[in-house]
Amino acid sequence: MAVNSGPLLATREGYGRALVELGHRDERVVVLDADLSKSTQTAGFAREFPARFFNAGVAEANLIGMAAGLAASGFIPFASTFAIFATQRALNQIFQSVAYPGLNVKIAASHAGITVGEDGASHQAVDDLALLRAMPGMTVVVPADAYEAYQATFAVAAWEGPVYLRLGRPAAPVVTPPEKPFAIGRITVLREGDDVTICACGLMVGVALAAAEKLSAEGIQAAVLNVSTLKPLDTETLLAYAARSRAVVTVEEHSIIGGLGGAVCEALAATMPVPVVRMGISDSFGQSGKPAELLAHYGLTAQDVAQAVKKAIERKEKKNG
Image (tube, rainbow, N blue to C red; front, side, top):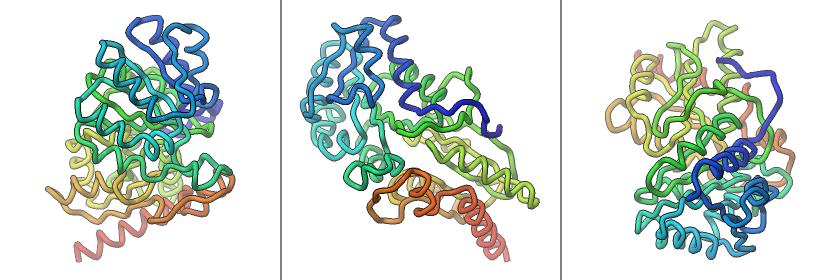
């Protein structure tokens, strides 16, 4: 699988389109927003189903509380807002009112990571995956592109229990097969290779594929795994590829603490310790800048991934003596 050169789309766009279709399929689907419906792409659902759309205003705690009440009444609520607000302003409500009672609330968090861009650190969620992954009973999904976000939204609606669905702001290339159904808890193998395994999620999947292309020209064959569900993690596929390559690189638009890198290292440490190089935000806040500039600043370009792969291979060879 290579990066598609077709039109660029944001994962939030795939989410918004799926919501409208879900609304026609199932009258239990309701959508809530915190006065950001144009940005979160829930505006289309609001126009089509005004009686099933609720704007909580700039009150994220109430947004989650309302969603919990609707779930307890038999509805399937999608509570939508920016990732920074969902996790930093309403975390206690998610814990107490959604996760603890195990209610069927879907938290769709857009504008995640540093690619929010010029809005800066106050609007950049770089620890949301760590926070939600640690919450008991919470499923965590991070689509790689708009098509996968579209398919993932249907899977999330059908999944029983609370789900955190992480979405991005910028338009990005398509890297997954458009018609492939989304299966929660399954890793998708986008490229085969025996020298190293690159695990990526979200926007970074495309970057990982581009890095694998560069490495192939140098004789290094890297497998690329799209880890679109961080929890529950598909450990069977992860361990199979780690056993084959004996070296792993993780790439995420998130802190290297507690997100994809954390999940992969926890799984490998338990049964198959191999050298792992984690790529992401290194225990620091974001800052203002254009998305491409920020990705370069934090070392998340294809060239950076290629260098990390070589570092992982060096560690493997040193370990093997």
